[in-house]
Image 1: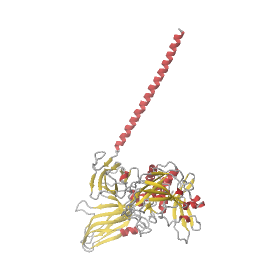
Image 2: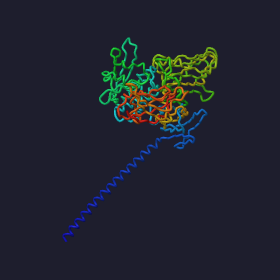
Image 3: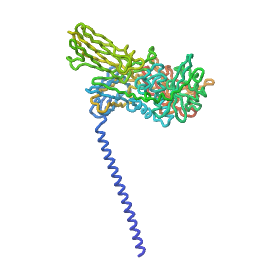
Length: 620
């Protein structure tokens, strides 16, 4: 009996425990179900909001053309010269992503945007997904996102290397107004040592790395060259980088990048880390630490002031009917206020804005004056890019003697220059002409580039005369960096405008096949060469440049990072204008037993590049 009572109590206790466990399980399932339901409800709200502002994906493929939404099919034309034209019509109010495909390796030769609607479109932004240069802040985001540095040292190297890759080395051919980060990348794409140092220092500052501009200047009476570099602070020390010289200064371990103070105490490290090749032979940097010849000055504030933060944004605005064409084949187009005697070495491009003021009907006019009347027609042109020149195409008719009209032009925002007469019409006549403004802009652009100008027709009709301005077409050529033009290899592209804009943007893409001569080099090899007391590492590849291919060169890339997010010996990326298939580097510049990675590609005289050769890993 006693045993039976004990067993009964035990069974009751087990039942209570089991019931409690079941209650906890039911409670957990109830709470979990509530959480799932709330997440589903929240997701449905998110989706509802997304549907209010949909994002369109518009794609083109060859030979069949399809749209991801099924709503927009781009027009496509293939000419006999291999130029492929694709036209997209993008409705505003959304951010549209264009997946431009051509079915073969091509490059963008020109790209146009046209406001085909009836309303003004403001703050148009057009960039590659994953490479946004629409502002200085977007540029630093692009660098950090694409290079993914994991330490301050890697961050400093990644920013330095990105500037080296996208801003060309051009001595003494830069505007004084090009120190803004956005302009340096988008408008100029090249510059002298001060442009390089200020740009890389500004980006370091934006990435929370302290920087200093370092200037080395020769003392009075000496015929030497000045130079500007920048130092960056990480790992409790300063490190000197020479962006324009495409160089930095490795210490005894071939890993640590030295600062000015270490180089002052041990000048031999300057000579040891000098550039390979003769591109910078005029810069005798072995004399920099000779205090009888050079003085050093340091500016701790240069990168911290507002202009270097890149406050300027693209501000691309198109009024109804206006268009802009970005042309890769810009030739020697380059604004310069120092030397005008030579075209830049690096290919450049231009943007051509077109403002076409043609009345809707043949009976209407832009400016019509009857007998004895006076009047003015004015049109302003404003661009986010420095203006090189403009051409005015017009049709104007006057009648009777003493009827007079003046075609005037003048820069916007110029402190001293007013509108000036560029053409005078008097008496009776009909003129359908073109008036270039190259001479005017050459004068207006001293010492700063102009980003806008006005066109004015000021007329007075005689007592029995009349004035009739029928048409005015303004073609404005602007400075634009070749590197800023989107490429087909970085598809998709993104286009957007100010919120609330109405209308439609027509985008026309012209692409051409990559030249057959730009074939990626094939197999690579590394040899150790010993000549007396000197030891070299010879980088080799095949095939060499074929005969009869002027302007072709090789670009060598050498890094301690397998993804080439930066280079440890950056000066090896010079364009080598030699028809050979090897490159020698002093063996003393390599850290022992560290893995290194080598690749090479071809560059033609238009700045187009082949694919990189297969990557080769090696150790010293």
